Length: 486
Figure 1 (cartoon, rainbow, N blue to C red):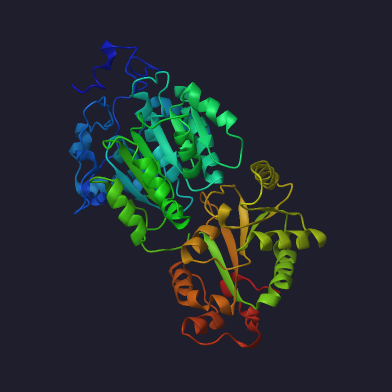
Figure 2: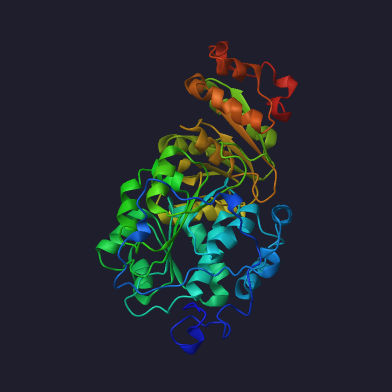
């Protein structure tokens, strides 16, 4: 019998919040797990879990009990089951799911939950808006409930690393909502705000810490917390963290966590750098890919790309706003903080209700701008890429790439701010001669999503120079992408 199963003999040593079973009365987790999901060992890498564990207390991380009916299922039945995307979760988690109004799990949740509950390492590759946050948070809650209660001076049991303050705060909101019935405490650790409240949370003891790498290292070096109790580690948007140069900080943090931890590694893309880091941090993981591993855009988003000159951009933006603005939320992306402020100022002078968000804003100002945007008081928000992945605002109807981003990955994530949770959205992109090197790959993304490609963009993809004037509107009447910009 496992240590988890026998804990009823010592009711004070484990979290027994809801029932004598500690699992809220649920008998089993019925979603099937089969090797077709990508189970394999990362070859050529010394397992981080073969390190000497003397002095470290054992912990339970395998909660998956396969019922006889699941064990008897054929591969075809398993696939049919996955297609139906049905899943049963423990009662104390299910209560929160029902409160939130969820009808069924998303594909990454349906397949990821039982894998995570088995205690195995997991690589999850899924597009923005796929529901991956709950894919790792709900198993985290189950994990916490099975561990010994925190003692004075203990650090967290679950650590979630995120690239931006905005994403960290949004993860915390979900952790608070779904951890409420288990009375699981959490805190969010990020820079740009006073340390005092964060330090007090850590000193009181929290089971879940959501953090950006820099501020967490600061807290560790100041001895405000430690990672000795961390047995469940999540790296969310690992690709973005590497893009932002967090590789050294991530390694410094992970080296302070016990090697037999469970690690969940989430990314929207799978470039070589992301795979290399996964090989070093994970052992024999499941690898789940939702959709194609190739870079692609959400098919619920209508993409319209027009070739313009730099000098045409602002006029084209105003023309577009006059055409589409109906009070819906609209997000405009720019490359630089200076450009963001300049365009916002110009829009406001022209009577448009715009606010801006970027890294030079104080946290208080960023929070205020987001609250105004979410409430619809200022339906136009300009942003740098700081908001491209961390921003989760419902009902953003339009995204405008005023400046084309520096990578196709960022393009996909930017436009992914619309068309979320089953909704439709539209993304407009200004494309200049300076962006020509991205034309071929952008065309591939458009074609994969069933979008029309204008003759001008197609010509640039073949290496032809941009048309004279780069207006890109000579074919507006032909309705590329489903509308004309006039």
